[in-house]
Structures are given as C-alpha cells and as structure tokens.
Image (tube, rainbow, N blue to C red; front, side, top):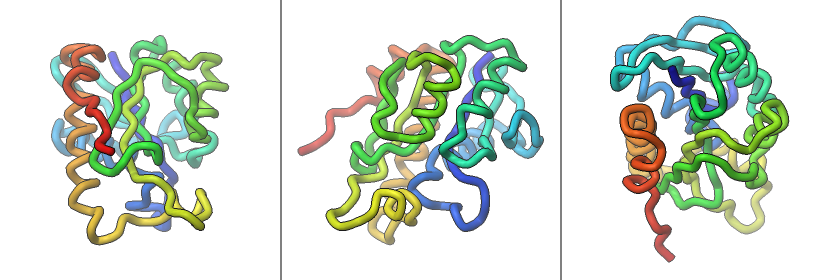
Length: 190
C-alpha cells in the first residue's frame, strides 16, 4: 500500500496557485483512477482506491503547507506505512515549469512543507515528486510568488507537468522509484 500525498493549502483563495500543484496532481490521479478524495480524516481529504494493482491512499492535507507533516505522520501511523511507501508531491521553485524530479530522499531545499515533514518523520528518506513552478522573479517576495497563480503563457506547461507528475507517481507504484527516476528526471535546459 502507498500513501500519495500532494501538498498545498486548503481554501479557494489558494486554488490553482504555484504552491498547490501537489493538490492538482492528486486531483488528476483521483480522476484518472476513479478515486473520490472527499473523506475528512487524518487532517486531510482522503480517498482510497487501486492504482496499478496496488491499494493507495490519495491525500490532500488540510493543515496548511507549513504543518503538512502533522497529516503525513497521522496517515503513516494509521495505515502502518514505512517511509518507502509514502510519495510526497510538491512545488519546486528550483525547477523550471515543465520539469519534474523524482527522488527517494533529500533535504527540504528551503520548502517549509517538506521541512515540517522531515521534522515529523525524523527522516529525509521518503519518496518525492517535485514539480517545477519556475524560479522567483527578481524583486518578488517568495511567499507572494508561490501563492501567485500561473500566467496565461505558463498554464499549458503546468497542465502538462501535472500530467507528467501523475504518470511518474503511477510508474513508482507499478514499477518502482528507479524506473520513474530514469524515465521522468530530465536534464534542465540552460
């Protein structure tokens, strides 16, 4: 069993922002696999179903980004999952829009949601799918940037990124993280 957890902030004011791409990937996975993510449990909206023959929990923590670890640890404890069976999906400003990265471990990279998850799990070793949202433009405040919406020129690329991230999650579940890394981790164009 896997828990696939997309990070974001609850509430309409945060919908479709850069910080909420994790929620968007969960919604796509839910749609593609006929899973309803609407049960309120473990400080999250949760759905249970099957992807690639494996039982999965899809989750969108409702704790706000900076406290995501509280929901993640509750889900892990309830379903008795180890770190190898959670997949965290989140936005990454160090990747251009259109790029994703699959990793099995790593630092928080300055991402407060990941920082909180690492703190709650007391480990940096968990599967993650980082979705590029583009670098913060000069003069912008970081919080304002990640809470901004994509502009018209970026929408097509982010929709494609969400599809690719969703496919990468399915590959992790069906064929393992190494196959997903080989298939989806692209070299960032300079």
